[in-house]
Image (cartoon, rainbow, N blue to C red):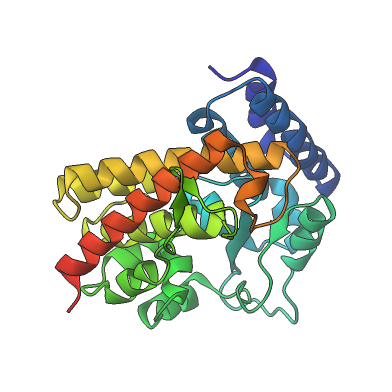
Amino acid sequence: MLHESLQELAQIAGECEDLAMLRGVAAESQVLLRNAIDHDAPAHEIVPWYSKLISDALHSEAVLDATGGVHLVLSGAVGRGDALPSSTITWLAVRAEGARIEHDPSNVIASTLEDLGFVVAKPPQRLDPRPKSDWLHHIDHAEGTELNLFADAGTWALRRVNEREDFTDLLKAALELQPPTVHAKAGMPETAAVLSVRDQLLAPIVGLARWAGACAECPSASTPERLQYAQSAEVLHPEEASLLLEAFNAAQSLELERWAQRVQAAQTAPSSLTAIQRSIFGASARSVADVMRAVAGRHTR
């Protein structure tokens, strides 16, 4: 069960009235998250808490006032509900129909978060504000990795993506993230290798779940829920979904541990990991690679 302090902060996140309060909530979330990790709080509890807190804060009145009424639809890790402190925060900025905007008013929110040490997507990864109708048109014509942005915005954007008949672009984008071969020595990754929990574990799992969830018409952007739907729809075999979920949970725990140790680099050498961390990474990478090869064998030609 979450500590009382985490629950209290979560309750006020959506009640931010101005940017000063939003800054306070966001900064306090980092302190409480670090404390929770230090006290061995499980990743499957604190990651959803952190994601919802950030989402609620960015949907608060403080943001609407600061942007002149532009609504932020959270995408990426926050939109999926699996945000980590190292995750990039991104959104779709939705302005009212007919409103004239000379610059992106959500930049003030991006700057506020960046000043606190958060990572925020920059243009062109973060697109200019537009009315909802324009976003829907954009989604209908999106191709390649751009489709990922919309699939992870778990509201009307995801519904529009799920209405497509062809999800080849999502599968292709996922398979391009397949973890590299990690050569083992005494059962652990070679110390000369370069490892990245975010790029070599989390990104491939999220990508494969995104594709599989769309095929299964999953209404949620949550990675675990996408895997569950994909298994039920027989897009993924039960053992494949299980391996991916196990690796996903392990990768989140590893990334949280590294963040708590104040390791900010996306890539690292195995020598900077403990023996247990190297072992977990190696086993998880092999599981993800095995599943991706199996999926590619069934669904590509």
